[in-house]
Length: 480
Image (cartoon, rainbow, N blue to C red; front, side, top):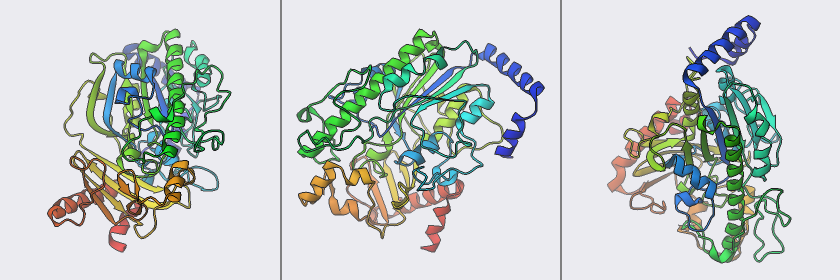
């Protein structure tokens, strides 16, 4: 039997005696197991390769690199949809967004929100005896499904200030373990175009006067690394320089937050996880289900690891985060099902069997940007089903307006990185890629008779996933 919100609320209203018993039980568990504090840090539109520890040669991320050196870095970690609100709903529920109801961005005029039956991670941790707080970007609804005990203030572009505002919550004498959800708005686009700079790139939140407490790290466009899926043009280089500066600001916030945890004497009982909600905010990544949009950074540092500074090749995704954190906390609920599973047991293993498949489920970004895609991705093969393949691919407004894409239009370019512009805008019903021989996903094998059996196998696997997770769009197999 699945626990409902009504059951949860009823349980919270049983009276002070029941709460006292619950508190005693929680204190007993804490004394026996020293349940860890958990800090989940979420960057906004931070691509997987854009950290030093993931091999980037230009972007400076010393604090995140140090965190990876103390823990494990996942090389095959995936969001399930490369759009902010839907992805964050998966992070906080353990359910694919086609099932939790957060189909698109949570702005009121889009009217996207999770179902009332969803029991979010902060509520389950509170029920399990944790005190919970969030700071920075939230972007999910309703609050009743994702309710934290405390909302802390802070400028989402200034991770250092955000960290400083967490000190009291971290350092309190309350002996209950804590869960802190720390979400910057960097390196998301924003702040308008830099009219004073060549090629007028988006500012990515950077500003001339900087931010209090932040030592801004700036980048020369000629020194940035242009990934293969982006065009190596001056406009793109100018924007990547701004993006890189915002990434370094995230890194400073992470460093300051860890410093505060250490000063409070709690670092050796704290699990720290760093992820991004989706890929880099450029066409070809964010809002797509191509690798740059969904293959993301995931760093996990626990106090008790024997093996540190290792990589793990298990294929995990953001539906796994809620059950993993609940597993760390000893707060896994009974009779409540998640789509993901805990990867806690994998943290000291570099190669893992039976963690070799992930799925993606994208439907909307903004309400006008309907383009449902369902994906099954294995170690070698990847199948994308473009359910609305008759439509031209819709752009997120900030990506369309970017200097990078506008230059592509203005110059009437036929190619965008490794991909043809036409292929990016107008997609076939199925895209099948061999990631070993074609890591950039440009040679579609769906119509190649040599791969017919592979195509049918993955179609069957994808349909089974949709049925298992109660995806309403599974009807499209039979009705269109």
